[in-house]
Length: 181
Image 1 (cartoon, rainbow, N blue to C red):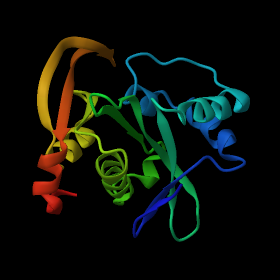
Image 2 (cartoon, helix red, strand yellow):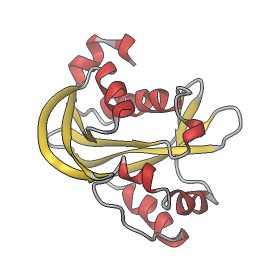
Image 3 (tube, rainbow, N blue to C red):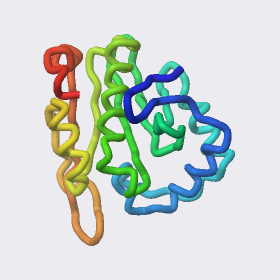
Image 4 (cartoon, one colour):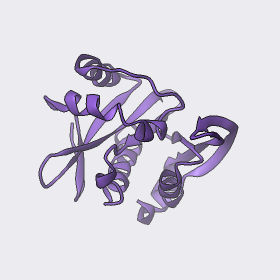
């Protein structure tokens, strides 16, 4: 499966991608934006299995690739998919600082939302973000996500405690505001 935008497209794992993912896992600054705990190491085999296992009824992962050269710039996925309740949790990551602020994340996120609402027929998507990840907060709020909860001082980052926020977006909200994406 492939979902295509102007700058990026979402695709399955290509041969050789696991090597890139293995290198990215050592960037603690990037990983701390994704997880409350950094776990190392994942080898090539483990990353390949992770993407393979994720493509199930409850989880799906995509690579994010540039349309002009097919270069891998990140990943995006939906986990904890509950078909009966029509809900899933989104994740996205653009590991290299040089690939950020170029619109790749926003477009990949838009493609992921389209997949969630139009292909999976989800009613709601959720995500979790840490208070120090201001770029992600800005993107999610600009896309219309609503802050639904705060987990106070849940994450220890660079010597300080930070809140973790839960956000949600309903399919009807997404459909009512297509310009947000």
